[in-house]
Length: 392
Image 1 (cartoon, rainbow, N blue to C red):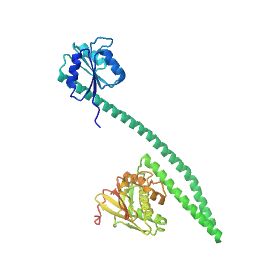
Image 2: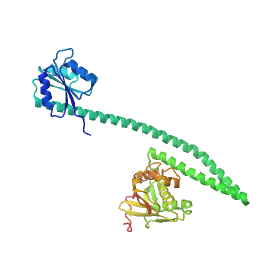
Image 3: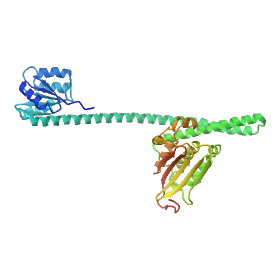
């Protein structure tokens, strides 16, 4: 849609001068409105605004040029004003600028000079308008950002408090279940079997709640900015094997094959072992629960110059490429059918990305519909660690 033409109001008691201005500017693309004196100009200004007002200083009637300038600037501060005078003096220029005019032109009019002044004035107005709009938008964005920060701080504080408040009774529940489990072991018959079944179910529910709380607390840390609590050698090959063993109750019922493969002598990085274990636990857990029954999970490591690449692959349904940009968002899970299939808050990948980035690394994903998904983690190697000969 084309922009509306700039509107210019000419005010002068010299009818021939008004006709000259109208004729000279007719082909310039402006909307030209003429007023024969100051009082007529005020009547027009009461009805609408103009982009620019060009007015003579000395006019008969109640309203002279100074009155027109003051009226324009009072009613429409963004409208520019140029005054015309047949007696240009330093005092005239100073008074004109004090009244709020942008510039003045002298009579008799020089048409090309007048056109250049009008263009310069309207360009100045457009630039000022754009600058004001940009500043206003920036102020709005800053205000919105501050409000969002407050909301995030309140949310993080709430989650942290609620998580800690729940963790204490959850710990008490775990102790009570352990005692009940010991008592149930001594019970015989169907009654004892039912009791042990109920205890097993309660333990699974408590474990699930404990994992949820751990995710919430990790999310709070994520919001506040992750920093490494430790910086020491971490054997990722051993870490991944330990994580897979810990997750055995997840993958064994699904009859998954879990394979961990690192070339001999590779897999050690510098970092926080607890944080890195959390990251790879999330990746392995995802590869298992989003897999197909009887599928496979492969964890492979290989070195590159200065870095270690670890891939975690599954043989599940795959992820649509359109979802990649959201994968690492907080509280995100892929599509409703996966959310229904797998319980959780959708914080795992967001936490994993922050942990990897806190270690100076990168994480990426590739996927193929019906064939599975691979997450690639690239972590820097200690400066003294040379690439392994088997690495490609």
